[in-house]
Image 1: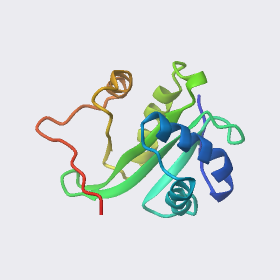
Image 2 (image 1 turned 180 degrees about the horizontal axis):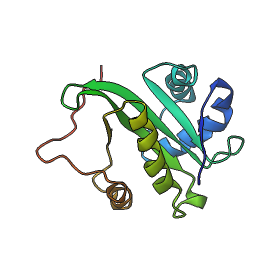
Image 3 (image 1 turned 180 degrees about the vertical axis):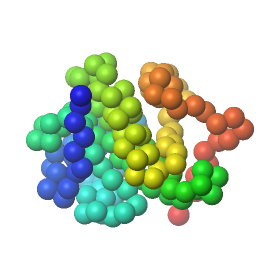
Image 4 (image 1 turned 90 degrees about the vertical axis):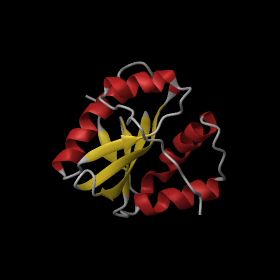
Length: 148
């Protein structure tokens, strides 16, 4: 079973290259300062989200960032997978599937009522992964955003 380790401030040097690789791969270029400033509150225990390192804490295979909101529709706290990244060299070994099976059980036990994520419409590999993990598109809904 793949271990999940709650990331702490001292994990930033191991986390930053993984986040940079994910964002470059997704075409979301950000400065190191921007990424560090976005990660730091979660690493320091901000209650609006968590970061888990996947695999060995000293040499993580990836990470997952989960943020928390409140939903009247779902009757309480819900969560959003903001980013899930597995190093390319170890993809296809079931690591992400294990994470997507383990983490929802733990979140549910902590009172989270629903877990959401978004996936690029052209990323069929990720869509299949998420479908196997039980995620489904919501008929009649699209995710809309407005940067502030």
